[in-house]
Length: 120
Image (cartoon, rainbow, N blue to C red; front, side):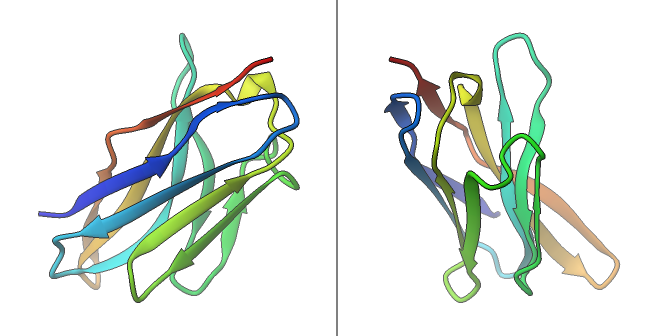
């Protein structure tokens, strides 16, 4: 059973920074792509950023140039550095990780979510 534990988040002023971290534990399987989604009140969950084990990244257009995703494959951790925060970044942020069961199968595990609020 894979468990994703998130940390970071909280309250920041517009233009400020926050850092989110997520650690995957308890897996005897490999962890593939990891990343972050977010869900604002009344909106659908949306992709923020993903990073593969090889370091390839994918960002939502709304966060490109402001957010940076990184990972430590040995520790199965993923970090999201969020700079130049805007009020519209306010949301619950969820870590996700693809658990590789076989070369052709796996599943996505989710963290419990952490609140990010950007407000003056």
